[in-house]
View: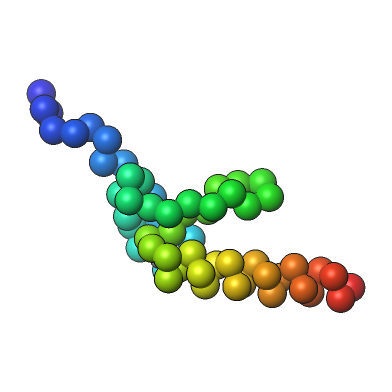
Length: 60
Ligand SMILES: [Zn+2]
């Protein structure tokens, strides 16, 4: 059988959609789901994007 680490599940980065190993992904809890990122760059982009969306919400 496969004796290797069985833990190499991958996820898609929420921002650039690149596949990254779950163990290396950054994640952030959003209001009703957990977002995953390939790295801090994408995490940062996502944060700014969600802040923008929040602003739109408050204006209305
Ligand atoms: Zn990414």
